[in-house]
Image (tube, rainbow, N blue to C red; front, side, top):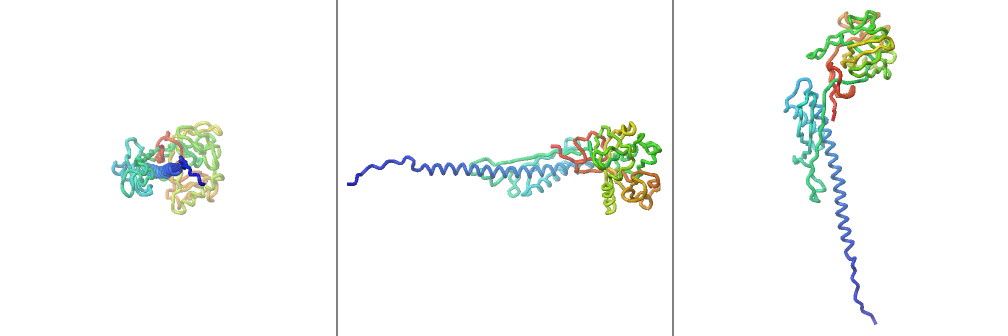
Length: 339
């Protein structure tokens, strides 16, 4: 005989469905967080690139001649849009209140809808608020505070750029025999020194503005600098310019191995010819006499050692030196981001 029994209640019936539902919410939330966080970081990176580019571009455009707020805003907006994947960013501020300094602030703008927040956020399914992110950058224009360059210092008595000049006169800066009050008749700026600097690496000397740098007793660095001189020759022969930023000294003292130069600042020289050693062979001698040199007074031949060219105003976004400029503004400025 079959025994009839009352079935037992299954108290766990449906628990799996609840667990799955809860886990789905967790997984959706985690997925939304991961995707949305990536989108936020990508947006912020684009906004930062736009702010960086805009700040440097405005600093360049406004440094010499100045610019209106409208012009600065337009430059910053163009660069902000160009650095956004959807070609859309808001420029909320272009601050020109500090001389030779520009602050640009950017924020989210949807390139399609024009909305000021990120769209298609997965977290919106969880009733999260729309997200707006931003970035800012500060760019400055100032003279170099230090640098590494060709190991030659030029005297301030040869520097000829006034505030309103873009270029100076073509001149011969002669180290042997000396000239005027810049060097003695023997060519010595200081006893045993020729304006040449101790090298920190082959054909490079590292200097700081408003500080002393050691001199070198040698008068000819051509052996270490052949590669540099050949590069200058290639630039000039191709129709370009051979530009070098030199430290400019205002005081010198000591003698021989204890000689020193006090660096006033940095100036850029458009190099057109030179003679750094005996003979007439490249690269030690290059375009140092007629017909390459128009004025006979600027020729450097015979016992002459020197460099021919002209000082120019020069602006660069490449870093020549370190932080805020402490030397005199001698026409060479670097545009750089400080924040």
